[in-house]
Image (cartoon, rainbow, N blue to C red; front, top):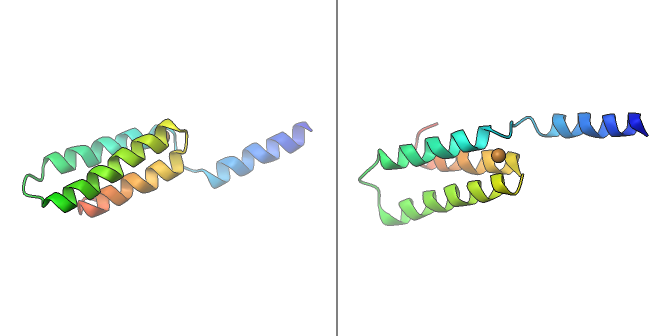
Length: 81
Ligand SMILES: [Cu+2]
């Protein structure tokens, strides 16, 4: 049983290389990148904002991998990877 749990934990970590604290820093980076871009059209701004909000929600829900992907999408939209 213990072996089974270790296996599951190992699998979990293999499948989830993202660190729990990687999302907030990526979210912050996206927020700062957005602030640094004053001339962004509204549709784009909304799209990036939605990504940031979603990333924060995913992080809060413990879905750190998804949060990282979403935050990276936001950064990609901002052309700031
Ligand atoms: Cu997270």
